[in-house]
Image 1 (cartoon, protein in one colour):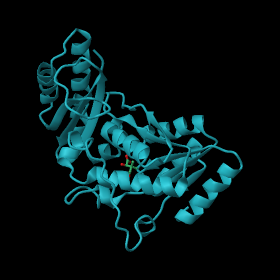
Image 2: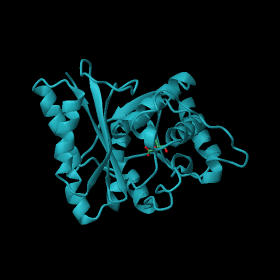
Image 3: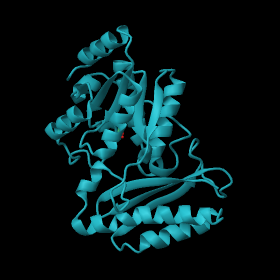
Length: 278
Ligand code: PAF
């Protein structure tokens, strides 16, 4: 479906028939991580709508909006196989018609991690999710834990604006060498792809240290940097230990912490994270 009116009417019809409606927002180029979100939604609802929309407002100048992978026909096939009931793939004008002037800023959660390096990114994410929630009015919406900061921002926006959508989180799905699945993995050269597993190895080292009793942020950072540093093609953009709900920095691990990392391989920026439990 291409228009908001079509998908809104369909969701309304389902709701009137007493069905629970789930929404899985995506930007397409779907992989097993996305499909696991669809399957989570299918387990919780009667009808699942998947949106495919490469949202221009969450890309900054010089980011990969124009090269973002688009494989729409393959995506449709995967979604049909996964059992999704409807695909909503609006045009940019459908989401942002002429005169659209609203931007949602979720302050407080967006100053650390990706928010520090991608100004305006989370405003774009929050705004498009608010528009999608208004169009579909889903009972639940599912997002992946790989984008942990995005998840926190959407939960806050949903609570603050009283959308009443139940937000569910899907676990990070990994390749066999531990690399978190991402549409952007397709940008990696073969050499970069081999080295990209260093991200997971670094995060796993942190979890190991914590299980051995380490609580100090700096010693955890040093150990992770050492492991990721073994991949010569990797450049760490940030490595931060934060509170998983507030995204505020933690210096001692006395409560569960989110250790999040962004790493460049060439022009490709990959993110990943782990929850460290003391
Ligand atoms: O995670 C994504 O794919 C996007 O940020 C989202 C949530 C679909 C909003 O455009």
